[in-house]
Image 1 (cartoon, rainbow, N blue to C red):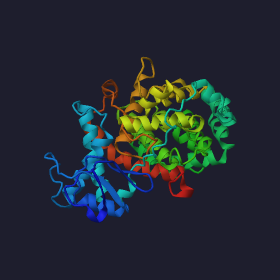
Image 2 (cartoon, rainbow, N blue to C red; image 1 turned 180 degrees about the vertical axis):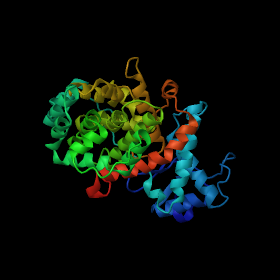
Image 3 (tube, helix red, strand yellow; image 1 turned 45 degrees about the horizontal axis):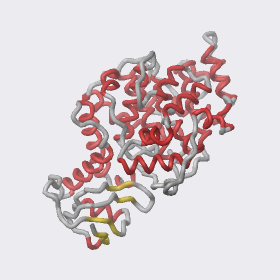
Image 4 (tube, rainbow, N blue to C red; image 1 turned 180 degrees about the horizontal axis):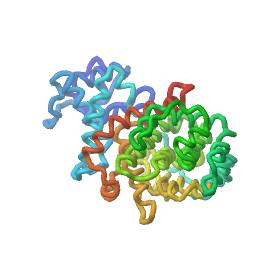
Length: 428
């Protein structure tokens, strides 16, 4: 193993360590056989030197040196194999997700700016060797944050509308109208190209400009818009998390990627309430934000364990904390008296449980796997969670249908990021 400067690298050398950009982004996994495309990538990212071995292995990827097309495919396959190392590629679902991820990576890397879109991987920050971590509990974590102890006023108003079967259009609009930022986000979302396409596809409607909340309620439905409001109104509570732990732009990009995927899957499979699926996807990792805020040393240890063992961060959370972010997020929604089906989507998206919310949780599980596999943002985990065969069977979508949905999901993600964060060009 030798550290070589960029001008000393030649095609055929093998990386003996992961390559991380100066900004902390994961670029290439160890074991990558360098080709012309890789060398260009290293130069584009201003990588000064990398660790390499001395020999080209006999099983170097086919096409690794046969021009830009082969170089791009080799780079894409190397990235995907590393990112999806916990996905069982011997199962149909695993093969489909891996193929889609490679196709998406090839398309991304083929664009001039493609390398700039790589998902960020947090730096390896951990507790000092031998340091002990105090025990933590889910209830203690929620109780220690004043913002999370009691339900904020906006949740109370919206929840009353959701619980009252006699609520009117104006009741729903009034519950939201007091929060101007929330109201503006909802109107942008309802007017977005993605939502307009959805309304046409599902309801045969061709909505004109929706310029007030009462019309939005009439167009979408009181309960549906209130459900969207519940999810959107959570965002401001997590604006103060240090960039040391997670890049919030990438976190919300991942969350919205999961949200648009869940909504699209729900609609494609004929299930009810795609708005609830959107909110379930948006909030599925909310427990991880609490952990970054309230237990940063524990999360540092979990992130180091996940990187060292090449496992999804949720599994490392279980080992370090005794519970994971899904359980914590579900408990928070229960504390806030969110609808039970939303609570199940969040709490069970990594481990399905029996019950009435099992199918909805399976949709969020698949959407989360897709968001991770496609590198739509990132919530702190380099490795894609395993795809549950039972969840795949419950969703009952099929590989061809999923492949057909993916381009629309990707387009919807860009539109929705702009709708949620227009003042910053799609950045939280």
